[in-house]
Amino acid sequence: MNLSIAEENYVKSIYKLQEGESVVTTNALAYELNTKPASVTDMARKLKDKSLIDYEKYRGIALTAEGRKAALQIIRRHRLWECFLVDKLSFSWEEVHELAEELEHVRSEKLINRLSEYLGNPIIDPHGDPIPDAHGKMAKPRPQTSLDQANAKRLVVTAVTDQSVALLAFLNAKGIKLGTQLEVVAHYEYDNSIEIKLKHQPAITISEQVAKNIMVRPV
Amino acid sequence: MNLSIAEENYVKSIYKLQEGESVVTTNALAYELNTKPASVTDMARKLKDKSLIDYEKYRGIALTAEGRKAALQIIRRHRLWECFLVDKLSFSWEEVHELAEELEHVRSEKLINRLSEYLGNPIIDPHGDPIPDAHGKMAKPRPQTSLDQANAKRLVVTAVTDQSVALLAFLNAKGIKLGTQLEVVAHYEYDNSIEIKLKHQPAITISEQVAKNIMVRPV
DNA sequence: ATAATTATTTAGATTTGTCTAAATATTTAT
DNA sequence: ATAAATATTTAGACAAATCTAAATAATTAT
View 1 (cartoon, rainbow over the protein chains, first blue to last red):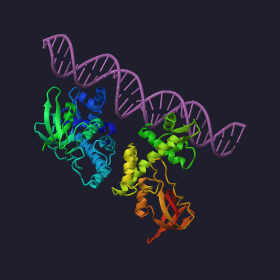
View 2: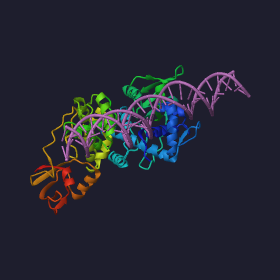
View 3: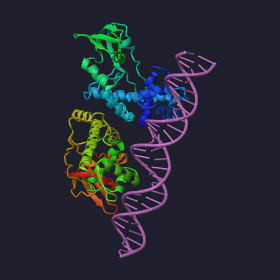
View 4: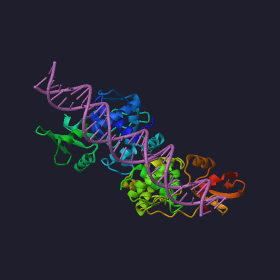
């Protein structure tokens, strides 16, 4: 089955949203894809015709086995290109998402398998997310919570969920990257901001919005 | 100016055809792009609006300075990706054209400049064609003629103009690649086929059609 | 359980890039 | 120089992906 770029983006976003909920709503998908609910309804019909999703009017969207397979292929391509950009072309991790977003749509199994081999068959990408193998098998994401919900004191950064340039640049400026260790100093209930401290640095305060997008696990 | 993929392909093809003739005809461009003359007329109007081509009804198409600049950027991307695929991912030269055709549409100057650097700023691609630098400057294609018109006896293969998989696979099977030295043994006037001999190998006969697409220079 | 709110779908339009068939212009051959 | 052949453009249509505005369904709050 040959997917258009638009269809690939839908499938990928549905997969992403389904990690949280078992069924994806029209509105959530529209928001994720920066489009309008009416457009999502239109595309849902097309993807259903192609057997990539289960969909009944007003009942939400869920990937079929075939859709899941397609999504994993796209994610594999995306994450391998991110590795390439960071490892070989010395991009920094916050720059690569947008580029990988374009490169991922070059559909060639041979290319992607050779790329994987060239990179040493990596199993996590520069944001800490696991990379599906050629058969769609992928390591389970390690147990992690967002920083705003973590209850341990000493934590290590494992991933960043919102990959907007703005957030990633902010983190970069603060010296926060994958593997950075940090300590939660205080929670401020007033606005749910969090004070954290990196090693050998003064404490900094982080808004709830930022904290929600930093994934961590206990050290 | 931001070009769509379709617009980029038109600009690139116009550039290619203009190396031969100063003005490109609607039909020639339609044939090159595997589309219909009517579609070319439609697109010509758009490209004219964007100041990428000079175009008057019935008078043919020619790139403006701006259009030429755009074309050279696209060609740069294409040829650098070909280098990457051959040098780093061990593709053979006849496989890479189609893939580069897709990769070339990822528009990021930073990406392409880093890729160039990573490859050691190559100045010719795996087919022997020169690669424009970041400013659009490109070595003049070395003086070369097609094999069917060469008058010297001892020749070296410098490029292949038709990059169809069929032809490239044929050449590969015969052991003919960039840099291969060959000797013209005979011309057969009957069908304009040519008998050639590679070192340490029996002579082989090559049709006029193939000979037209192999570029050579005297050794 | 009904009203109000929110979510989703439908209907109809738009843009991009393409097509076919018909009309018109240009070139070539007589 | 005219007719025939060829090349190009126009007119009108279509598919993909999107949109807005209106209609309808589902959820929630009273």
